[in-house]
Structure formats: structure tokens, C-alpha cells
Image 1 (cartoon, rainbow, N blue to C red):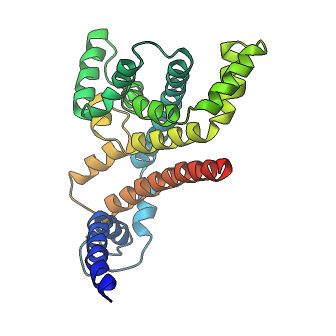
Image 2 (cartoon, helix red, strand yellow):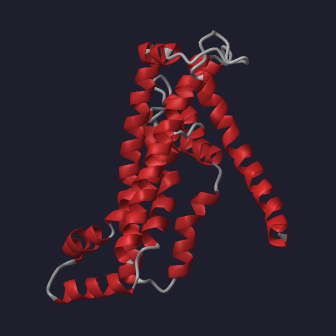
Length: 263
């Protein structure tokens, strides 16, 4: 009985924390099915009218496609560069390895606003201007450290033995990396890609600073909100949330399957 009384405050605190985190999301999703023109109580629905309007909005669909292109492309580049950096650190083990690791991870501590402003200045000086390509480069910059950290954390003695065995048998660095190391690390590589895509998919600040006419979905949602919060905005936000959750679940399941396979 005493133990139960001690556990009650912990459960209450846990419930309060989960409510604080997920209540706004629940409200957003709920009122995306609102039947009336205003996303305010009382709830009038459910209705799919606002999802129909989202799918019929050419600008929204175009921005959705832009987000998919930028997310997939930037995540693929960030994951590839992160894998190459992780393998290089693992293979070469430089004397200043600690400093190099800090420098590779340090961009995580820099605000997206600073990264976006810095890249905007660089692109203007180079005469490139703002575009979806610039947005993709910005997303590579912010996601590369995370991809590197996820992949590098999975290197260990087993991979070192495989790496040494492959080289002893005459395989070069490229063959060892692509045919031995990469297949073994496929789970963290996929997880790094999914996490990177999730962060790129709903990133707003860099996308707003570096895009011009072709914008991503979060920027388009921000433009729609200038006219006021509507169920259409809630429906678009729910689509963003659903895709983000889907990719996050894939990343989590990939790592979980790897852990079960290794155990």
C-alpha cells in the first residue's frame, strides 16, 4: 500500500508530462476534421472536407513535392557523408580524433537561424541566390553531424575484425567499405536517413531563409497562417505530422530489429 502511494505522484507527473507534449498534437489532428470553417470548439465533424481542399490546392501539393525532394535528397547526401566520415574516423583513428569528433558534432549546437543566415550570405556572395538546392544544402549541414553520430556509434571491435580481415584478404578501402562495412551497418544507416528526413521534412527556418518561389510545405503552411488559422492549415499540419511519425517509426523499428538480431 505504501509503495502504491509513493508511485501515484510519479504516474501523475508522467501523465502531466505526456499531456503537455501530446495535447497540442491531438487538438491539431482533431480539428483538422472540423466540419465548419473555424477550428474552434465545439467540434463539428468528423469531416474530410479540409483534406479534400488540401489535395485540391496546387500550391500545397507543389510544396509537398518540394519537401519530399529536398528531404530525400538532403538526407541521402547527409547519410552518405556521415557514413564516410564515420568510417574514416574508425579506419584511420587520427591522433586528434577527439578534436575531430567534437568539430563534426559541434554544428548540432548552432541554431538553425545562424546556419541559415550564414549560408544565405555565402550563396549571395557566390551569386547563387535562394533556391531549393540552397535549402537542401542547408539541411545537409544541420543533419550531417547527427547522421555521423548515429552511424559512428555502431562501430566496434566486431567491425574492426571484419575490416582487418577484408584488408588481409586483399580488399581495398572502397571494396571493404561498400561490400563489408556498409551491409553490416545497414540498420543504423537506414535509421540515420529516416531521422535526417524527419528533421528536414518539417524544418522551417532554413527553408524560409533560403527558398524563393519554390517553397517547402512548412513554409507554405506559414503563408497560409497569415490569413488566420483554419481547418485547412490543421489538415496540412496533420499530414506533416503523420509523415514525420511514419519515418520516425521506421527508424525506431530498424534499430530495434538490429538489436534483436544482435542479441
